[in-house]
Image (cartoon, each protein chain N blue to C red):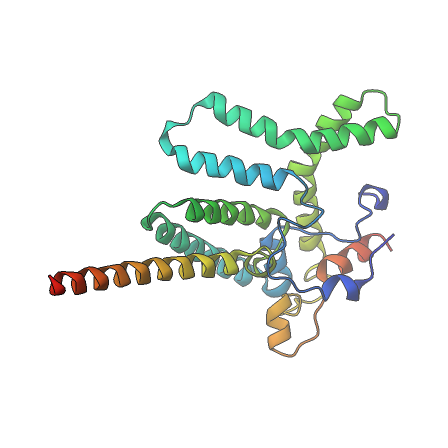
Length: 115
Length: 139
């Protein structure tokens, strides 16, 4: 590789390289296990939710941000690529949905009692 | 042309994909394609997938083509395809290889100093890994 090929000033590699530089083989195994567990948990959780336009769009952005693991580390994915904030947005949206359903059921119950 | 280490490593953003200039248009296109896939789910055709991939790769290919034309290279289309192939399949692997060559033979393992937020929480100084490796190989 020549410097002219890459004038950016950075050599960004996959998350495995970053964890190798930090902890060696242990880091690779730990980060891969953590990522697999975390991403699949989020995936299963989102698929269980009701399919709405905002959830589909958030899920799509999440999938696109996961592709950044090719040239980024785990903290970059979770923090600057927005995975964590998107996760919280989904959580918040889900909570709002639950809250709305509860409020609606309460209103229905009250109206039924009045009847 | 090499960026200063401090400026590059101290940036702190929570969400940057859509406005980050290095991502370009392809990320927005990718997100739209993914939305379409998730809406359609099992009703996708091979033709649609191929069209999506073509649209996705069109913009980077165009940029490489324009670059080849500006450099006055003989066959710009071939250069564009080769550059795209190189960027997707070769460069990431080469850069990863650089990491495995340097650690731990030349530098000892960093023990979480290059991880942005973790090093910040633990009060360690951030080690600019990618920039350091660049300067190591292109002094």
